[in-house]
Image (cartoon, rainbow, N blue to C red; front, side, top):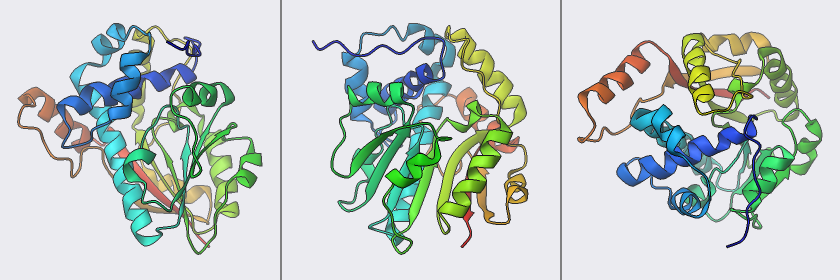
Length: 275
């Protein structure tokens, strides 16, 4: 078997294995939400001990990862219904496999991530003509020139589990620049409250990774509109809203989901860059 690249343990990049594990494990049990065959195949063929991850995140964590993929993909499908030849940029793509499920045969898709992350990704998921990787940091704005799009066909940015690792000042600045460069574009991503981010930091450390501190949180999504007059909040909704419940889920699991939405601990934020 071909030897795969190794991710350094004490890094943010290493966290890409967490959603991969979650989608593989939870999608087998919850195919009505999302079924990720690529993730399942990668887990089977990658020599990594996920026992500590499974013990730390458990069933709820796995379901959260598969729901995150489903919600982001639903948002992408809504976008490409309006813009069938649009461009999608997946920020911090890691080992995301969404393109294989949402591709309509005409969209142009970019996976943006750090060079070592893209090298790791390509060892499992090769690029194709319309599914292209960009090995650069989000903050290296030269990637703007690597993305092909037209204002008429639209551009949609998505990011799953990434913005947490940035400080607010960093994110504020890059979103201001993106809003100016991509007027009419949209951005969809997940976020947590300050309390939830503290809990997530503790869980990541329990996996043995002490080099991936989470900073960014969202208690009130309206704050994004104060960052720039070109940024508009389209929506902010509960993490588990409109997700079909599996009858086999325990009462405890369902209560955790309802409590999360009720207390606004986890959410999805949709922004638009005004023209």
